[in-house]
Length: 201
Image (cartoon, rainbow, N blue to C red; front, side, top):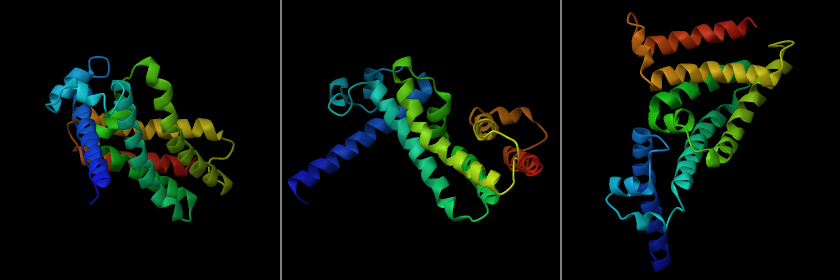
């Protein structure tokens, strides 16, 4: 390994250490009450060290935000080879929910932790590709005769909101309010009820 390669590897490892520590702090404190100082304290480094890698906490937050959506989108795009668009849509929804249940930290940062107004525009831009991918799948369903006379944008918003609702209830431990059912049971059968309604639309 050359000196340059070793330095690049060390930089990548340090960036990952900062991001992992920042994820924990953002989830604990929220965006507004997180600072470069308490991120540095989380990973036992001086605040000055962090500024060699990120200009401020907003850049760190957006990096985590972007990583989460990139992981989610990659998992959804694997399903692009499913020929039937409605089966693909159902699979995308399942994948979305599975991502939330397996990556609770990422999901909370992507959807449930508020960020500063200065960074909201950038954060929303990162999510656009994922939303467009869902919309394209829905439009393909419409071209096959599903969801007649429905506007694609409104339908995309409704479907995304419904799937997100399941994920948010899981991530905030609100499924425990349904005392007669396990979380797994609620998620599995709740999503099946939702897809049955879509089939009839």
